[in-house]
Length: 203
Image 1: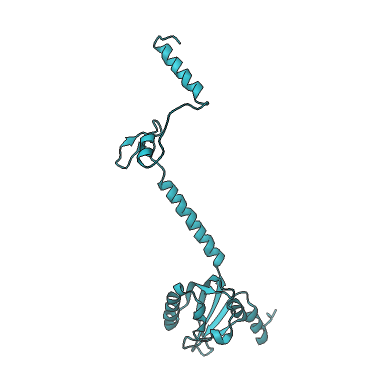
Image 2: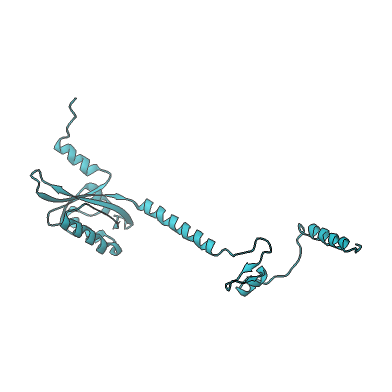
């Protein structure tokens, strides 16, 4: 069974209405086409984006790296992938994953590049949130005190073991007064009575 073939106008519709941002560059490296998704995203016209105009929307912190990747791969005619922030029509910076591939004419001659971009902002934000949570967890673990599981003494910075109270006071912690909570009082008194009986003392 013959597979249906797309007509030229159908290809144009697919490119223009694709959910991804699409661009094309000539053999001199200057961009000469952006699909409607790209233009709607940036809120700019084809004339504004033409040539190197698209770079005006790239975040200043990403621009040099972005251009270096683009131009170096273009010269070698190699596939490239990069991530950078592009200003959306509402002024928000959005992270894009951009993949460019060299294209060739039917006769094998180099025809420039074609690229596609997808918005990965949510993924980048999730990665950043995960990294922050991991850093907080590491900091919390680093702040754990080395406490003896039996006597509850704390190993100080010099490697010696001090009482918890002394350690906290020396490190800017609170001072302590000693007493008994209601839960511990019966246990403490029973121990005192047992010790007294063991030594032949009457209550």
